[in-house]
Image (cartoon, rainbow, N blue to C red; front, side, top):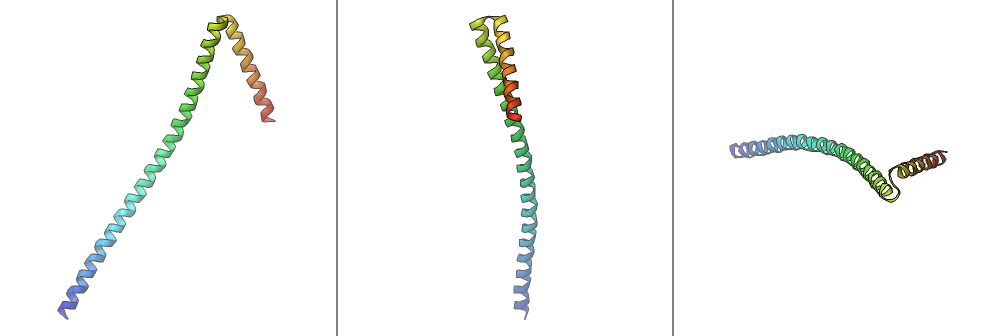
Length: 95
């Protein structure tokens, strides 16, 4: 009988350890999920920032190219014309 009780106590102890481990792993899993969400949000923001920077780079490159080819005043007029055309295209696409 004492031997059986010893075996039962050993099993109960192992079950408690498993339960504690399970609780700890659930907490860790929850923390990791929160970290993933935080990093996903950060990634979205970084992608937006990258797109903005790419757009700025294209604008600067275009402006420099136009300025070298046509001069400052004429390139400024061409850029204004291009912006107006882009705005018209956006309006058409929005309809």
